[in-house]
Image (tube, rainbow, N blue to C red):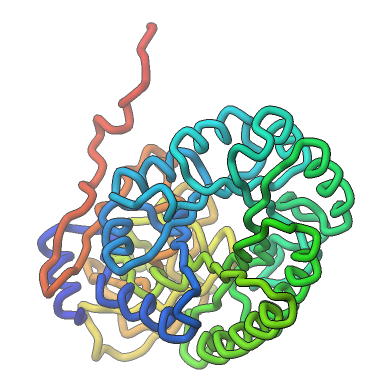
Length: 399
């Protein structure tokens, strides 16, 4: 997909619009599958981007699905995934939601002692489960996306192993998988190996174990020269470690990963319109027809997204602060070099496919943007832009 294609899409569907390049998702998926042993399974973390067309595309590539809510599970089934290709990994949910996942026959991952005890007391070994472990490893791009440290709400502490064993023994629980997830945007392959070594140590305590789920956290590059996870090197290292462990202990454990951002981030190009150029004594603002109601990551995670002027790609470079139209401090980029921006120009935010539309809202009663899938050289509208009536949907007027 070219910049010319993006300008055509902006003209056809308007802005703001999320555009997903299917070929990019395919390339990222094949990069993973070619880097790891053929028995390794990849479960797309659909919390990154859950449009049903994206789910169907991943399914057609041969992928599995990682879901964190019962509605994501239902979306996956609606998209055509077999129940056994879906892993349900919620946290802090009511036991009834776990039971709903059971009724749909998907893999269940339990991340706290309370639910583990309830499940064991009611179902015993009648339904196999995964147990999510907090390995107490601090990793990730920043604290907000680190999920395996000692203060994280996710998983059962590795130091509570004896408690897990007591629950297993007293209720006859059938644990078929162990799961960890240390964080997002992990550059160092050794962090994954550290987690894997912890899994190996735990494996001896679970006699029915079949699967080791390493979560994900693969780093993607958001700007030129930035490091990303070397998946080929990682694949070789974990393959050797797993093969050695299986041979030594007479097991046939299978490795699972849950890539989300790694699959879809690069695929997306977020198109906006420059509304106003506002010089001040400190900077020159470019105000666009979007805000953190559409792309919250820069304000929430201090994330970097490359911004380009599609309408004036050969203009002289100037320094701008790019801001949104929300009534809050709403900044996409500070002091950024961009080819001269004029009012009415189309700008593109790169690498916005993960947690972009998925975290959008109607804050300030602004409408959610459209979504477009670029597939086989054609642009397909896969979600209509909100209309005013959507703001009133489900409201009940009593006055």
